[in-house]
Image (cartoon, rainbow, N blue to C red; front, side, top):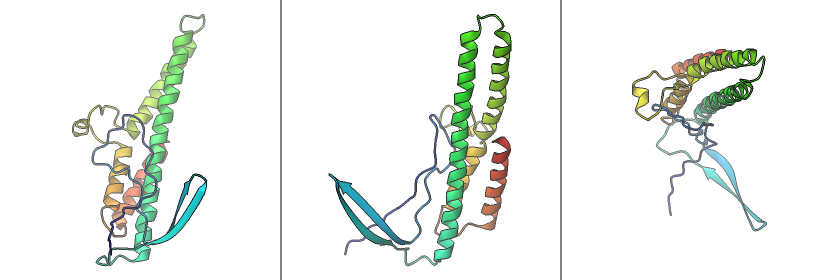
Length: 186
């Protein structure tokens, strides 16, 4: 009988170009033990098989505990994705404002537009700098600059997903604190 170790995971967290994290985890949550189905379609022909994902028999974690871990990891992944999407939007809006200000700068009455673009850019940058360490340019930079919300969230995913165990109460509290801090910025 062949034995295979499968690491079945749900979708990873959303990322953005150039993102550098210090010891962060953006992998999707691992599937909990249970029944699953796989479907393959080739040349219009579909095949479906069911299978059971079993836990390691040496592990004492219950199905309910696996589910609690999965649920928190899913929430963490979604918060991280929300952060990445916000950073992407911030960068897009800031670029649009800067591009528009540059296009109209030589026109009469352009000053209010350029001033508004600068003010908006400054506000967006302040938010982005709370969400992500914008000084990170290489993988060594997190040693020199403090990590920000997205890195803290991704780090928590690594802690919660580090073993076959339910999340600890402190991990749940840290998630709640990080979620509240993220909501302030969003």
